[in-house]
Length: 190
Length: 356
Image 1 (tube, chains in turn orange, purple):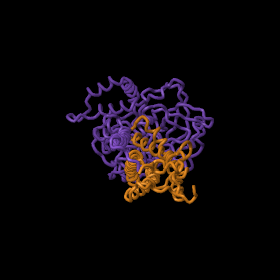
Image 2: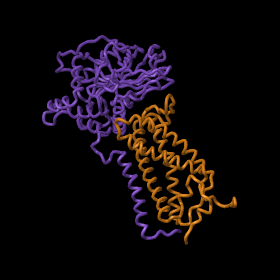
Image 3: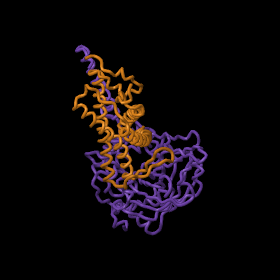
Image 4: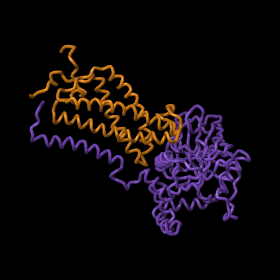
């Protein structure tokens, strides 16, 4: 294979980041929605939610930097121009949400005059001044962005499943954790 | 493109739809939407609003209060139990709030109403500690469910304006530990005011010292001000804010003091049941003195916008297995989130009254 050929898959580090964050984000969404409706497990879940959110923020920054310096595999020829536009826009939305959600959470706790406890004696400093109205707005924003992330995730999953099961253009292989030899991605059939 | 035979197209589409719908249903289930009758923080906050009427901007419970500040002077004794920086010798600034239980911010003070004290210990370097205590010797309920049912049972009846005694009797029959706790509470004389009240953590907590030795504890703020019984005379014409006015006047006369007394459990003492008092011979550690020298209205104090969440704990302290603790944290958070987004109304105890 000539080195000038475009890659058939995302870089391994991109694929690892993708699946690691997929698990973390989905865990976080379920944890968040369970937590706010829970009495008995509320405290335990919040204690996981805070540091997990900060880990996601750190990984999201690493991922954004990685994204800027990595050559992407091309879209499969089965994707129309509109589809490509939607895929690009939803990718930007997902990146925006995984950066914004932890930042809004951190800012919300700062504005609510809460200590930002990670684990043991490790705390983060506040990033906003204590302010009731600001807290209320950010608290609501946190919920709205979380639902938006969940809906965007469902749309992303639907699109990938559609391509994999209906169009069968091996779109998912671009993100598979294992290596795909370039020959295998060649579209069969017509 | 690999053509999918028409016959297998439908099952494939169904598989996609089913996967997406399944995840959405799981998400909804986790959020409690299919089970609206389950007890949640929102449901308890709603019940406070139902029982007390809507009072936007105020705490859903302990709505009427006054804010204070001062300091905690730690001796070294507390450090034998917990490595929290608060227990290192020295002075820690505190912010606090005295309150009356109930969700009505303009109710007239009644000496029998349960009194609360929330304290935020804020060491300049190090982690903060928040505690919300009341002046009862034990808590009347053991679980969040019992708390919710007690709230409903003690709600004033629409027709009479008074609690329905039959409902309260039914509640006490269902929760015998509450009947015993209330009997224990009534066997203790209440003091005349905030300034000579003992405020108790009631829930148990775990403390870890520098050697990582763990003990279960409860704590109390025990007043230096001498005990005086509730005055029963002329309560009819009493001032609407009589308890708060007396507190404000006494802080203006001289700073008030409480000792932080930490009681250490013995193996076998219940840590998951706040209705039961631990035996009185348990080891007690006097960890230092709380001094309150400044009083301010809710309207001007930063303490108005503090959630005295009992689980904001420094390293060296942790929750016990008491089921009320996590529930308190959840419901306080719910109340905090609601009131912070609402328009603020002036407190019944005004800045003019506190001299601020």
